[in-house]
Image (tube, rainbow over all chains, first blue to last red; front, side, top):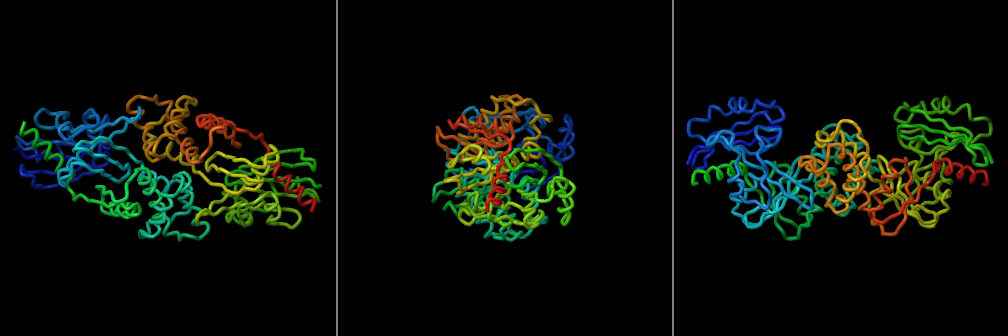
Length: 295
Length: 295
């Protein structure tokens, strides 16, 4: 069992952890060096400057996230779903054999239309270990939310939802930006619930988004409530499409404030939430490292 | 029967026509003087500079569109639906009594959520007269598409769809902008159909929009086909929500290229299209003027 440098290298951020063989996280670092900020050919030097001090002889480094994309350090071909923990552990893309490897993302094909993830697979497998779950649905809310179905510890299906990005586009660049307040008023839980409810009953976002404007025009919602209402519309639209059963439980993994919003929205559907503590990515990468040592 | 100066004063454009008492259009003019370009208080002088020469003594002017909004010349309160031609003709907002009036827009309330239109009501009533229809559904595609239900020549219901605006936001400001071509390649009818089909079968725009990226990533669609594919996704999403019946016919009123796209998309649902020639707004305003003269 070797020390591990676990790295989550995304589009806009770079995080790392030095992890002892027993799983203890000794130190964490983060940098504003997402892959979009790294010119081609400079990944080795950025890696060395950020984590070189941790790479004592015999130390292993595993990297998950967009570093394995075409625009990243080295392309790590997607594992096709259904895929389990063992599949991604067996298909590492070695940048330096025995020393630095990139974890592959997952792909799925639904009627000729592909979907992809990079980084979330490691979070998901880490979460399954942390929670001791074999079968569940998980949502990783964010700019591009992922909904993931796990059966017998394998990811059998997943889908991407541009929820956070559409919220930002409507908030900043659409006609609604003229109606919405310039700053960020305190979240309004009631307006958020109203947005979720309208989305769940409504005919689709292209129509319901416009109600943000008309409810303001008719003075049925105060200006400071509109961002929360719009957020509810977007998240409600995402949830509406998931065919969730009343009484079901889903795992929500994300930033605290966003997780709380999803929990509030899911309550309207009678769906309960199981949260995952921080560190699912580190747990996932540590588990892959252990597989290698055993092998 | 008096000569009419018919004006369509929208958010970004100003158009006018001088119309003889028998309906003949003598002259048309258009200006880049939408209401957003007119400072408060300057509507009379802009009107005078654009159309003053047409306003011989005894001439009537009727204005439809956003000139009747809170940010316009004078607010013309909405007529609540169901509303017929006679209702809007009876609720003109007179800027100069007997000489210049603004046509009110329509509002509808669906479970506490209002929707509004300004200008489209005049186009719709003009189209009903041009086509000799008493009962139909109409769509006015655009930045904010309107779907309108007419029963016994009254608008009983309508809804707004931010289809064109969402297309532009996704095209220009989203992550998809990195994948889409910079210029405007020739329309690709096959990719458009593929987008419509995926939207009709898919779980919602928040998800299907992402396929624009993955189909490109997996080289299943060439870059130049992506704008048409995305357009198909947006229009398909709008149509999916309309509960259209196979064999039904709808009236489509809009710019030629956009009308053709809707016709192509509606064909996938087995819905046929009835088009309206240019001039529905002028016909609607002339008909309102005739009501006044008769009264």
